[in-house]
Length: 157
Image (cartoon, rainbow, N blue to C red):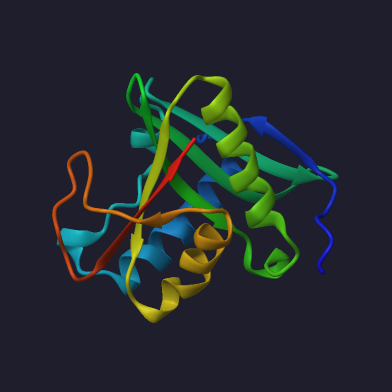
């Protein structure tokens, strides 16, 4: 079993320079795998929306991962912008970020946490992470529409 690395998860401003760089890589990856009409990764300006809480995980000051929680309504939130730097993958960081989002969602009183991710092979590790955390396939939610390029998952809290 892999050990989860130490590090601090905190609410962060997505405009911080190293976060901007990581998000640029996240967007390039997501948009490079997905047709434009199905690319739903949020950019920095979208992550500044008051409905979004943006988190980072840093170890000794180095940015290792980011993730966001977006309020959809009083009972439903969405996982957004989950990304771990390539050099830190496979060490449990994504799992730790997801556990943080789930804990915050529960503390905020949400009844359901959902997400959209790609259905392509490049997104298979993300889908596996979400499934291991208890997320199950679901119908499109919020503004999403049925698409062969998207996988929708949800977790009852």
